[in-house]
Amino acid sequence: PLILGIESSCDETGVGIVRGRELLANEVASSVDQHARWGGVVPEVASRAHLQAMVPALERALAKADVDLTEIDAIAVTAGPGLMGALVIGLASAKALAASLNKPLYGVNHLVGHVAVDILEHGPLDMPCGALLVSGGHTNLLKVDDLTSSITEVGTTIDDAAGEAYDKVARLLGLGYPGGPIVDKAAASGDPKAIAFPRGLTARHDLAKHRFDFSFSGLKTAVARWVETARLEGREVPIDDVCASFQEAVADVLTAKAVDMCDHYGLKQFVIGGGVAANSRLRTLLEERLAARGVALRRPRPGLCTDNGAMIAILGSEVVTAGLPPSASDIGADSGMPISKVLA
Ligand code: ATP
Ligand code: MG
Ligand code: FE
Image 1 (cartoon, rainbow, N blue to C red):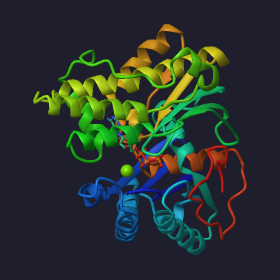
Image 2: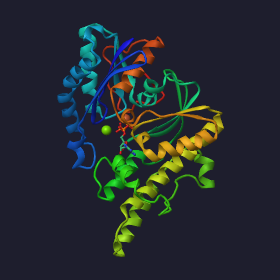
Image 3: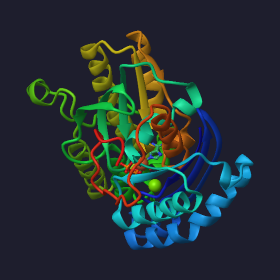
Image 4: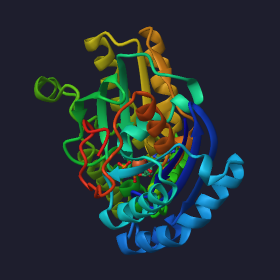
């Protein structure tokens, strides 16, 4: 099927077009620059930016894919989770399109979109498949038995999300927003062994209760203390070493628990998704450790890891192909949509 996907859960306005599992267009307009001075996404600003960017993004995507709106078989749109005011802009646009074209509407889960997007690059996932979703708002280990109907959360963060930790560390180092790509770049010229930062929930007594869970707030505090101490003692802060050591701590614990999960459930394939899945160290360390266990790693290219419309379009395509019923024409946004719910 020819599917149009619309994404507007946070600060990216995305319109993607896929035919089956083939990517035809993926237009993304980000309002990230407008949020930078606040150090985080300002919901009202994001909503207004979606309103301005939606129609131009749609037009660019149609031109790029070289298809006419009337050829589209179905519209998929992010129904949640995300910022309420941002979600409703995408949802209203999708509803208007579906109604005027008389085509079915599918309100889908943004997080499942992050897991699904790799299908566009590397084909269908083998079931059961393990998944690590690491983004600005989420950090989850998932067991996927069926992408469109059976996803189980195996572990989650008990405090900050991985991307949130990146953003907070970048902020306390005065590096700008969003922190992930900046810290990743600085880390490239630093020593990952320079500072031994803590690995949350990996001690024996924590593993008993939180074997597959994560905690990043202690790590963030450890970085803050280390930097503060260096400044108080009048030492220059080695930004690159701090970034490299922080990044190593995050990648190490994410990877260790992913490998443990594959062992525990006997999984042979593992996929990553979400903005932090673009992280260079996470990608190489995971590849290394999973290969040693005979588990195949599926990693979407960095540009598909962060929010975009193609991930919503491919999930819509899988849902349509699976024969699931469309959403009601009056569906609302669900800002807290759980990952177990693929369709609204
Ligand atoms: P969610 O998907 O949970 O609703 P979101 O959509 O805001 O959250 P994404 O767009 O998936 O999140 O990811 C954004 C996050 O990814 C930010 O926290 C950003 O710092 C982080 N990020 C992006 N690139 C990298 C990178 N190379 N290394 C580490 N983190 C990264
Ligand atoms: Mg974003
Ligand atoms: Fe996201």
